[in-house]
Length: 437
Image (tube, rainbow, N blue to C red; front, side):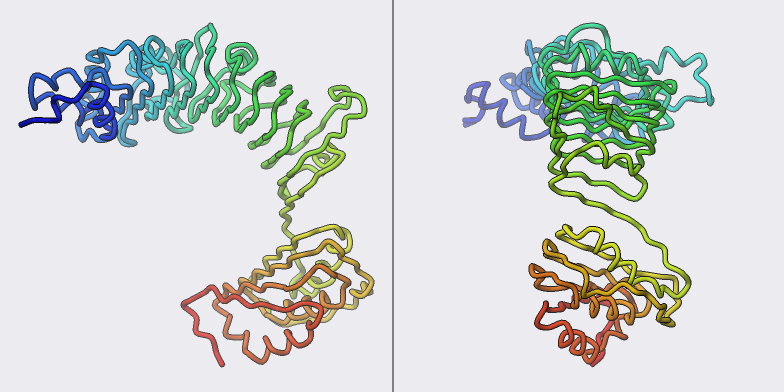
């Protein structure tokens, strides 16, 4: 006796949703008349992910599944085409229209748009224009539309995405004015925005939002970026941008990748604003003017690359000088490597380690990837002469094929010299190299 067929539709839906495939769910129609239309009212539709079919057949099967869907609303619509199958913007249109009319939750569309046959848009320009219809009841939308060389251009329709709180747009192009309008007026409840796009033409971009909390901004061809977001707490900016204007009084975390010029006009700030962030993560490609954006940074993560002269004789004085200039630093990580010169020369330098006070220093990690260990040993010895009351140990991670030079005698000698100021801990992570002694 078939007890499963006697279950209510809601329970059958819960079972079929776990298949994560509308096609697999539709196959249950063969079981009996009772199952014939159960799949067509699933709260979630997952299409394309498991369909090993020719490109045309796969797109047709998705069209057929959408046409056969009987429920008044779908809570999740997920369409993922295999990476080796291209679909035209015209082919995507009915899927997006279906989402506009039926979706009450999440849209996740991941496809590879057809490549543009010529360097410039030609007869297929209209076909490659992807219109995003208004989805008033959608709460989350994720759009992956191909590759950077793809000719698709996303154009949101006029209207309000009233319920939308999360939006991700990747691998397509957009007009700057469409991007401005989408965030500034069409998404009143948007909290998280993830952009990885290319602007149609080099343009200034102005993003204003009273609801946005986090933003990942990666839009090629952006000249100047203005952000006004009263609730924003997290901001990531990548790609080269000539200038930024950021007004976000609640900003707590800020990442910048390859920003050339960054400024923060004081007229955009409340009078006597503290301009404080909890975390600032920057690299050596970031402009020094970035640090003028804030009065206080609770945690600074700074990655820099220091190039030494031929024999690296300046390594120790350079590191000690850097520590002296950053005497409130808590963690200091050094990756030491060079191209093969291992002869050590002692250059004359006047900096005395005993004059350096590092009252906040808690952790030192040295990643030794290549070269002579003599300079590492020299640096650690002088570090032990600094005043660093909170520093308990120095960790040396050995990842080089030259770890054989790090004998037990060297380790013991260095440990004795640094004690009782701190201990020296060695981690050999290259398992293919046998330790000696």
